[in-house]
Image (cartoon, rainbow, N blue to C red):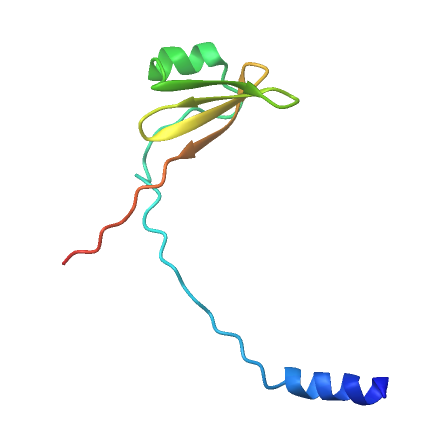
Length: 95
């Protein structure tokens, strides 16, 4: 009985077809946007880019701090940049 059920299941599975759905994400900001580099200190980021629009308190272990600027966010661990990420810029199709 189990073999018959397994055989029926496998035969029915062959009839299934996957559909690929593509969702455009738009553009990810300016390609030439200068952002803080990994390893930069908070002092260097502050001197080079000025005050952040918003500074989030440290969370987690190890503590990770985030500074948000208009076009990107900077993530710090122990006062050093671990990543800089451009903000999503939606692409509006021309009408």
